[in-house]
Length: 393
Ligand SMILES: *Cc1c(COP(=O)(O)O)cnc(C)c1O
Image (cartoon, rainbow, N blue to C red; front, side, top):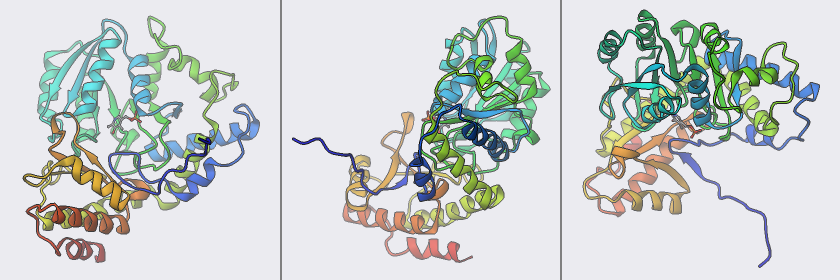
């Protein structure tokens, strides 16, 4: 029983994240580890900040990657901005809005829920009603791109409403960053967090965040200390802040930061608008193929996320059997439904590096093959031509 190295198989990742990591990023991860206070590393951190400001479309000084996955970015936003006794309006139209509620409660604050059905976008009218009914609310929190359903809410309008009622706006952009339009400064977002393993196509484990000057002011003027030592931005800023002494706070995940840096360089080379357009185009190709096959989308047209395609399972087909065969026979991972949608839908991701013509065609071909073999009631031989027609445009 000799111990041996772990060699993962070569998969194609078309689920809700992680997405395929580009060879350039994998190569960056393997570069020599240096000290996290090394001047060369500190220079890289400065560059990283600029690259993140570009990705978020912001000039916010307080922009950096939290040393932990997207969920920690979420928690960073809440624990720093919310104090016991505060009232926070949380919009929930899927899994992640529910986690926001948990965060608010654990901060000792009161959540006011604005509920929309899974697969629907956040209804601005409902938010406005909640804001009118709760003039003492401090903050509005919502998910821009609900990865659990594939719905994309109108962030600009929701932020406007929050501001019109004197609330800060906190946005989950874990799945939108790098995949669909997100304009932090233009839309006036006060606090935003994301992740690295969705449309940035870096490995998981980091959470880019950004805070407006107004949000930073709220954090500096807190009545009490942030209850989390690790996530307290007043302390983290001694390491990441501008002109900071780069004092030791925690050991940065050095190699993972090389990976994110490379992923952001790739994004900048492509251009943000081009990346958004690429996601939209390949989504349209995949949509054409899936619909030709006879599958239907969970979210109505116009509200769909290009990078996360939720489709309903054909009648009588077992979810786990299909995903198991895709993985075993095609090395292809697609996502299962979450929460209320478990067992009812698949979530097919087209994120970052994985969003390309080869993957669209490969996924359609593999899915058709498995479904036909299981006797599903689908149209065969039409998905690829339908996708190709869009890809050729
Ligand atoms: C993936 C995801 C998260 C959580 O990110 P982790 O890196 O898994 O912690 C939060 N919100 C949304 C919308 C996500 O898609």
